[in-house]
Length: 49
Length: 234
Image (tube, rainbow over all chains, first blue to last red; front, side):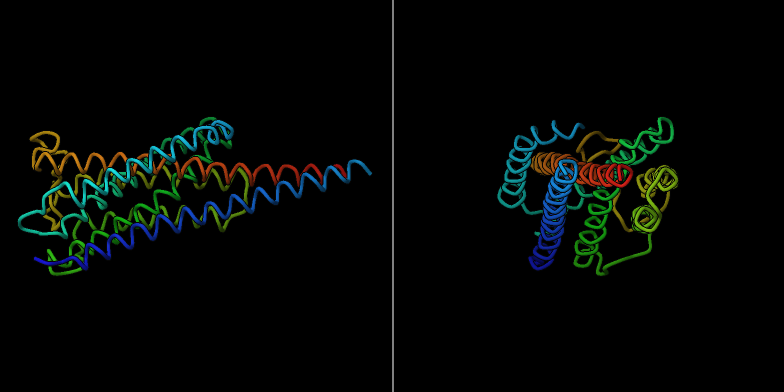
């Protein structure tokens, strides 16, 4: 029984979904870290004025 | 699950997860024999069952953390519940997609409305609703409370899913890994071994994703706190 296409499709979906989620988490974390740094810097500047 | 500890443990957990997945993929595609009746498509099982395990485990964590949130009223528990729900929905989606891909060549149909499949779809809908509730309501303790109630009630579907194949006549086969005959009694030892490696890899991935998701929520809280402080100081 040759159903290699089904096995391939299942693998593409599983790995695609996992990598997409990991990529989304990484991007969110980077954006938030940058926002936090910028906010801290602006607070520091306004405190020094 | 302290933020700094998460960062310290992340490289170790990352390498452990990568190694476990490398071992799992080797076992799935090179070690286990091809199943006699279903053929090569049966190898989907090594992704389908671990995805189901992680979905159930993640929703159990939601259930547990929701109870702890309602009891202790600490934001920490709400964060853990939310992070686990998101990961649970991801893996439940994988179950609902890999299942029909496996079913089509074996049952001749993508989907049947039997008790196991229907109750799993209901579980997915409950936790999607949980996440939508969180997105569409204002942040605060009321949102966390409503979400906690949905998180607890939603978990009640999991015993129904587990016992559905025993209580009703279903297309979905009865459990082979955990059965009355013993652990893995209905499977070849090499298949049990490959499945256990895959289960380990998926479990490690769950903890890796949890650490990352919790970190994101803590960063958001920190930004909100600083913004509020800045607002009140002016």
